[in-house]
Image 1 (cartoon, rainbow, N blue to C red):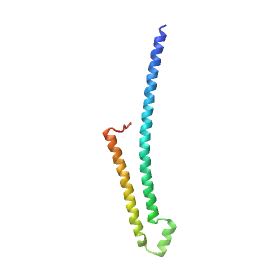
Image 2: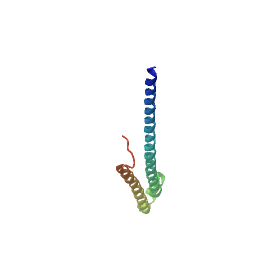
Image 3: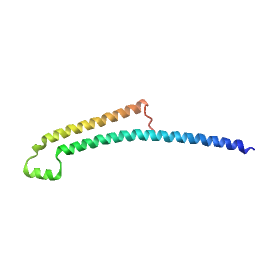
Image 4: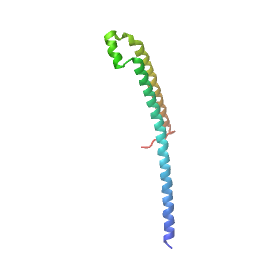
Amino acid sequence: MSQKPNREALEAKAQSYQEEITQTISDIKETAKVRGGQILLAGGVLAGGYLLYTLLSGTDKKEKKAKEKDESKEGSALGSVVASYALAIALSLAKDKLVEYLEKVESGELKVKN
């Protein structure tokens, strides 16, 4: 009968390990969800900025060759200014999100696991 208390102790220990592992996995999932959302947002901002830049800068290869043959580059000056401004806004938004994330990490609101 000495094995029954030993077995119960081992089962209790196994249960506590299982709960600890479950909690660790939940923490990892939450961290991945938060970071994934932030990365997705930053990527979306950068992709949108790049899209605006390419749409407004007129860097299509065929158009570029035609423009070089037909006219000088001063025709796309307005597009370049607008594209630069849109890119600056996109980078500013990405910077703000990054600063917000770092402030949350620093204040302890988010748990960062190494």
